[in-house]
Image (cartoon, rainbow, N blue to C red; front, side, top):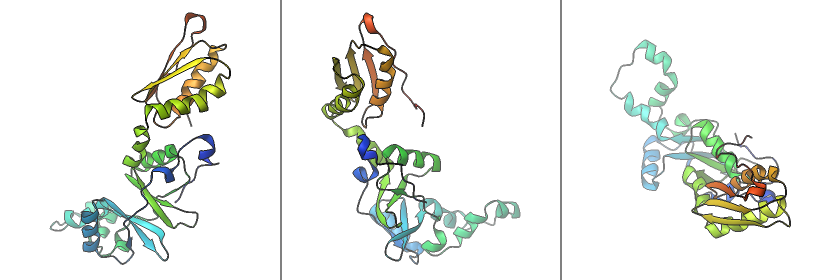
Length: 234
């Protein structure tokens, strides 16, 4: 179920999934055997593999969680209650191929989706990685939680430059607002004509990839409040 962000995130200065995703992806076909899947996971140090069909269309995902029921129920005799409660796991305990083991349909994301959207999908669906597909559902790469954290590796100088261009020059044109960044924390300073725009600027700064937090130092003549860190709505 690929999901795309409306519009073009790059037009708004946002990084997209394609900027941080891993392009070389290990995948299996529908007929891959149980043992082959385990061997590939061990060889490539991954916890899940996309399952492909045809020219590379993603049809599902097989993960360690899909494989574990075979070991769990290997020498057990589940009660009738447990059989009813865990029908899917019991079916996977007897599965032999990727097509029988996989979770389908696959939860995917498009390469042009914004990074916050990919993060939300992972959080809501409780998955550690997402296959990246094109409009036809063909595999383009994979993005993981660690990939999403790469934005916090941006240099302080790069963050400061983007904050000036994307936020300060637009919200406070022609006004002197200082921007310093240390360890990803943005500190804005100066006096502005209308302090009601301070919370707006702070929120926009937090939307810049790599920003950890935002503070504002204003003089007594134009002191505004900076909203606390955290979600600011959809």
